[in-house]
Image (tube, rainbow over all chains, first blue to last red; front, side):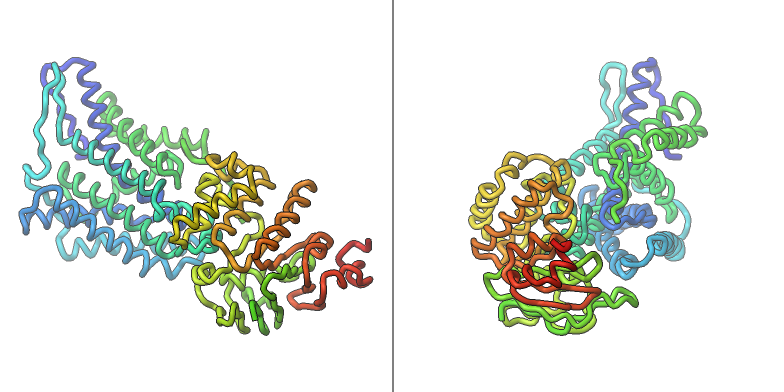
Length: 305
Length: 236
């Protein structure tokens, strides 16, 4: 379902490989967008936010609603989905996670799983479990031919949007006061408090950024495939894996992990079998973690007491 | 009254960590809080900065009741806390660490001139400005954490074990820096296990034992008291 591999007629091996690479990087871009939210939230409150994939799903639905009811084009629909998801992300943080900030970590983890199921089955109740599709012209940019290679511009757009967002996020995190406060709280919460940083605000902003990125991923994912209330589970788990793969808590690691996972599974399904792609991708993950337990770019830091 | 604590009680769960603590600091003084491990020195500083919850008692700073207000407000009022174990932001550069100290300030010019002042006081920090904080040596990290606190331009500086884990050469240096910060006009409340050094730089001292203040007085007098020498200065 996720990787319909359309082989262009008359293409040779090199051309096919390049096309698969582009497919892989585009799905990897989506994983990376989702993985950023996982990794930033983990970085700041050490929570694996299992409801993160469902924020993506809500983004997909909001985008579809904007198209169907207001006939919006891609950019306004994405912007509205980002706002709604950011609000939902902060709301879940304030209502479900914040009261448990000093509780054992397992309690918050279970709560996150609860929030995930709650969102999924509320959507099933209100919008039915059936799959829906975006209008075919919503995210359609045609394709161009470079020699014997046909490049889907939809996939190039996914990459371009992802790159722009990644650069923006890096600027926010590295250069702005807001970004510095998020890094400070992620590094040492008490020390950040002593600088006068509002820990609550830093955590809220982290959820805003992560949820808004998930919204973009959700609309693009929905437009490329189909949407349904459980659509967040698979890319959510994959993106979580990508975040761990790259080094949980590490932003460049999440991007790298997402890209590698997308490319690996696409190439495996193209050259071996699509039914074994997840098995191979996860086998690689296990091997990487055996060699580097803290992930590709993660640092081997001991938990501070 | 510049700074005072009245009948302060702090509990960690069922443990009564601070029992009716009373102390005061006058403007311009160095006051030290000494005592053995677990006596409640760090707990006192954490209560002042609102990092720990206060059960009862009152903390006043420049005639304002600051008991239980937000940590952020305490910093804004002019109390900076250099925590035990330095607690620098390891993944941020030295320059970024220092800028975090000025997080609540908006006066760009003042921040800039304070940064230059810090770099003059700690030239090593200027040399290492672009390095990650985590790559600094222990002594350099101690200077960074003190510089970071000074970037808030505090009126009262809380120092928690600044000499802990440092090579002897740095211990000397840190104490002379503490004195020069004080001479430049910052009041200091100093927590130390190195009672000998602390009493040498301080004006007055309080001795804590299992959450209670058991003795107070002029630092020079405590330094000469037989009882204090035997209990806290290793009988020298």
